Length: 466
Figure 1 (cartoon, helix red, strand yellow):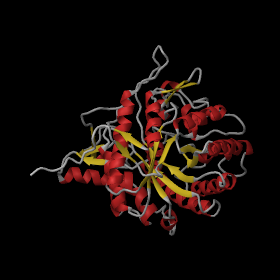
Figure 2: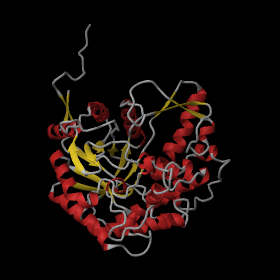
Figure 3: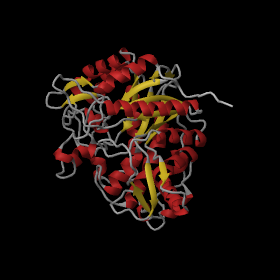
């Protein structure tokens, strides 16, 4: 007896749903530049990047990709790509420099102009309220470990919504709060550079609280048609083996990496095992009555950022870690196979598995892949072209994984490629390039890479050619 081969044939197309959103994404500090213009005050990333030894080559975001002055040029690139949506972030210190008090109209005017030009180009504006650029004055007052920061964030969310609510199609409260809490306050490799496991846990809770308070502020201001969302960089975890100790290592990292946000936001509770695992660090008394109900304010979708999976085993991590004590019981394992310039493993199955996990655990929550991409060693050849076949292969594999997840029942509504432009890559400075548009930083010249042409063709046909 023979069976039909159900695999797609060469020459066919993996088509996505008709209303699937095709987007690209950026973040304010990584591309805007104009760090001291029109009333913008320093953020924690301004301070961090100007601190010797914190960022590779002493790079800063002072100029970055100069998007603040080149916004029309960059929207023209998006239009040429054919994207339906553009995910950007609003720089909190550009519109409310002190993190409290009055707004700066020139800062809001920039985002008014950005969103108006996007709408004229028939591109949906998708705004993230917080992509890591906390006003330095709020950090000086305690930062995210300080409960008051959550209330200041809700105030800022309301002010931004009042100014831009008639222009923005989707509002995202936070981008990757795990990074804000654990890289910023745990390992210190991100701004503000603090190294306290307890502060990381406090920051994580106050970010959850800030999200819920911001959802409340947005719901009271923006039109009913606008969507409200949250974006998480959930960890796609694998055990080195099926041994009980290795499986427990996965559980520990899942608690402090994933469920520390999923459970409060979608279930209104803290994971019991997280509280047990961290009992030697804190009694969680900073969680007050009503906080978890506030954090669980309903959202219209969940943004999922994915780059690579994480493999763990029982043991003790030999290097400093942001994992709030879990690293005493967990070892992170390097696996063979292709890797990006970030030294991250390339494995699209991790994205497929993550989307199916969310389908099972959150069946009523629509999903959007809000970041996915890869850094490679790109350069312009003598003819001026930038060929990046490795990135094209990476993107093709991951979009195929998204398509497979949709076929398997996951309610995935869109895909945002990271990133539109080469940019300031946080502590790596300008040494890593994620963009599908090459930026020559001395001249600010933009050049489509091969991956940009490839992505434009994918969007035009509504799917992947095989």
